[in-house]
Amino acid sequence: EIQEFWSHSWHMVPWKKILCLLMLKNGIAAGVLGTLAALLGGGLAFLGVLPLARPAVMGVSMWSQVFGTLTFFPTLFWWRNKERVFLDCCCIDQRSAHKKVMALKSMAGILKGSQ
View (cartoon, helix red, strand yellow):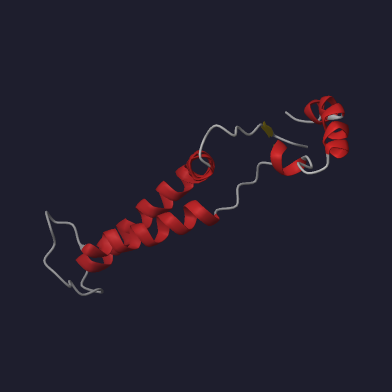
């Protein structure tokens, strides 16, 4: 069962659409995990487990930034969202006019099967 139906727009630059979808679908997970990792890095530096390579700026260790950043971005790009999505430009053949027409004719059934 498809949870969402996405229709693409050719009016926006593709990287902006991709970044917007990544933030929409993975942003919360990336933010939460990045924050937890930053707290871990800061805590380890505070406890003396990690060396202070430079003095802490306003009480913030560089390890907080390193741990947070190195967790946020991989989570943002590689988090596996469990929702099933129908993206029309990927699921409908864009090269064959006949297949495209057939897919558009069956769109009602696809939409009926989605939430």
